[in-house]
Length: 68
Image 1 (cartoon, rainbow, N blue to C red):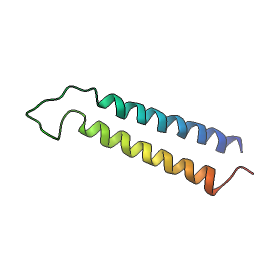
Image 2: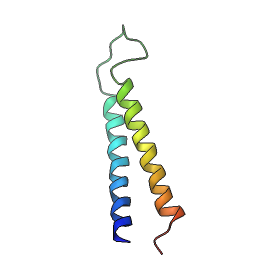
Image 3: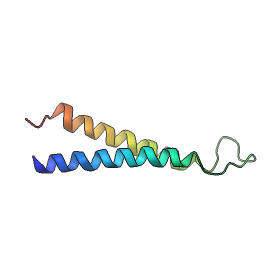
Image 4: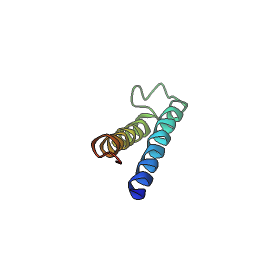
């Protein structure tokens, strides 16, 4: 039970950190020549996918396998 709680806490941290870093990617400088594929394109893909996967893990751990 302690392992599941620590895994859930770590995944919550990863999800929040990914959301924060997604928002930080919005502050990257833009280059008009690059168009829609700018300097924030790949960081947003990586951190968005990481946040979604961490959220799915939390749902699986907390909702589908409750602590009690």
